[in-house]
Length: 147
Image (cartoon, rainbow, N blue to C red; front, side, top):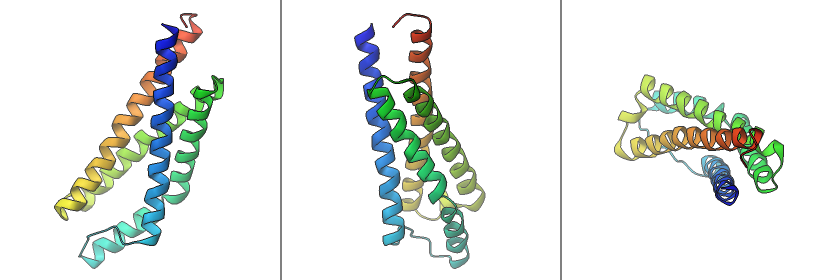
């Protein structure tokens, strides 16, 4: 059972690293290219203002995921804490993005924009729940002496 749990936590660590790399890549692309296909100048301005608020929180998210992943791989207690923080931050980000996108019609701008945003939003929600569930389940097992 211990080997299976260790492997599961290693998979979570890899997922955390991949998501952190994705976040960093998004911001590199955001600042170096025009990712949006929004034609309406007013909506584009609103969208840019919204996205411009996220570099610092997304940096926190990426750093939390990286620290969590490292901690899980090194079998350190801080790995559980930062993985839970990262998972929770992913849920918050996904829900905030969905709220903004629905209220501002971003999903209706075009098929490319809809697919991109829905994919990112679902990734945040699914990965956030998955990370929290697996990490917490393994932490409880460890506390109860089952690992």
